[in-house]
Amino acid sequence: MLLRHHESTQELEFRQLGSVQRTRAELIRTQHQTELTNQMEYNKRREDELRQKHAVEVRQQPKSLKSKEVQIKRQFQETCKIQTRQYKALRNHLLETTPRSEHKLVLKRLKDEQTRKLAILAEQYDHSVNDMLSTQALRLDETQEAEQQALRLQLQQELELLNAYQSKIKIHTDGTHDREAQELEARVALRRALLEQRVRLRPVLTPY
Image 1 (cartoon, rainbow, N blue to C red):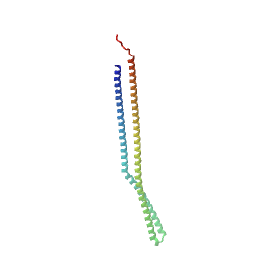
Image 2: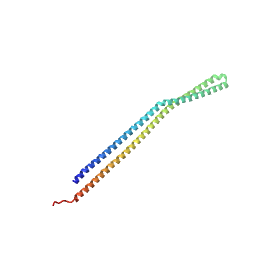
Image 3: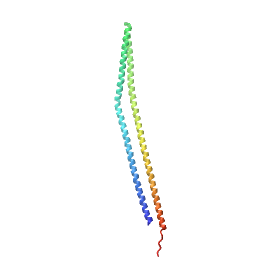
Image 4: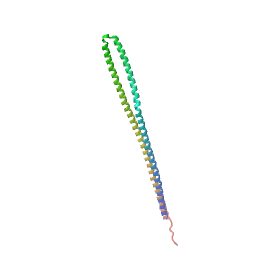
């Protein structure tokens, strides 16, 4: 009778422990899935925000480039004015110091030289603008690519940390479950041994 009661109690205890452990494991699994979903949504939001930031930068780039181009143009115009003033001063000086009969030839040479120098300045202006445009576009691409790579690395590291933390929790929980099962088995075995000992030591009643 005692052993049958022991076996019934043992079965109930194992069922209860199994139920508690399954509930605990399910709660942890649900919590980990929620944490992972939140992390993935956070990652997507950060990536979307960076893409939007980059799109705004690309849209604003023409304004920035136009401003830089205007600055280069002003420098070019100022250089042309200086060149023109120098040309006029040189022309006046040569006309004053050159015989009148040579003025036509001197003026032609000066005009040709002036045209050549202005053409060089115009070529330098075009080169400066084109170089600025290509450099700024490349710099923006490189900056945005670096930002994307840095964000990917950061988010990947955060995800790996979360996975490591969840793995640690699962290992700890599995260990707890194993320890609880072993402790219950030990208690059950001890109780059975004590019951068997009581049965052996119980005096046998002999009829009179």
